[in-house]
Image (tube, rainbow, N blue to C red):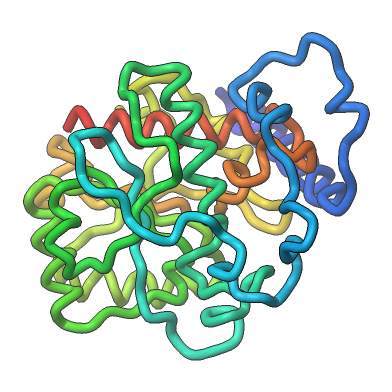
Amino acid sequence: MTTADRRSTRERGKSERTAAWGRRTMVLAALLGMAGVAGLAGALVSKWSPPAAGTPAYGNRTPLSAFLRQEDNVPYDGRFTFVRIRFRPAGTGRCFGGGQRGEPSWQHDYPYAEQHLMEIMSGITYLEPYQGGGNILWTDDEELFRYPLAYVSEPGCWTMGEDEVQGLRDYLLKGGFLIFDDFRGRDWFNFRDQILRVLPDANLVELDASHEIFHSFFDIDQRVLDSTGQGWSWPRYYGVFEDNDPTKRLMMIVNYDNDIGDYWEWSGSGYLPIDLTNDAYKLGVNYILYAMTH
C-alpha cells in the first residue's frame, strides 16, 4: 500500500468513525431493519435489550453494581474465562466514579463487552468459553494464574501496590497475556510508568498489520487496525516482547487511542455500524487465540 493509499484509507476510516459516534445517541433503525445483514455482530442485535423497567438506564450515575446481575466470580472449571483486572483508580473524577454509569474506570463496558465477545468466540471457534461474563481479579490474586489472558480497561487511571506489581510480573513471566484498552492522550504516561514498575526494562514496540497476532485467526489488514478509534483519535498498537526480543512471545497488546471494549459492549444495540463492531471483534478473537497458542 502506498503512502497516498494509506492516507486515503485512514481519512475514510476516520470519517466513518466520526459519523458513527455522532449517531451514538440515536438508534439506527434503518440498520436494524436491513434484511440479510451478515457479520460477527449481527447475531447479537436481536439478543440485546436495554435494562428492564425500574433499573437504572445507561447514563445514570447509580453505581454499576446496583444493576448488574453478575457480581461473583465463577469457579475455575477448565473453560476459557475472560478475566478483567481490578485496580484502585488514580485520583478522582473520571478515574473513580467518573464513567458514564458512575463506575470506576476498570469496570468500563462490564459485563456486556465480555459477554458479547464470549458469544462470538463460542460461535466461531472451538474454544467453548464461559459465556456468563467473566471474572474480576486483582493482580496479586493467585487465582489469576489459572487464566491465560486478562484485560485492563482505562490504564491511564491504573495504580498498583507493590504486591500487585510483583503478582503481575510473575503472571507475565510465567506465560500470561494482557490486553490494555480504552485510553488515549496523556493517559499514556501513567500506563507507561506502571508497566515500567512491572517490567523495568520493557521496550514498548509499535506493531503493524504484519505481526502474527493480527493473523492468528482472522487475517487483519491495516484498514481494520485503523477502524476502531473514536473519531478524535488515531488508534495505535504496542506490545512488549519476552526479553525484548521480537522473535519471542508477545506478552501484551496495547490498544492506545482506542476502545475496542466499547464496540463489544454496544455491538448488539444498533448504535454503531456493524462493520466497525465486526472489526473490534476480529481484534478480540485474534488476541485470545494468540494468547492461547503462545
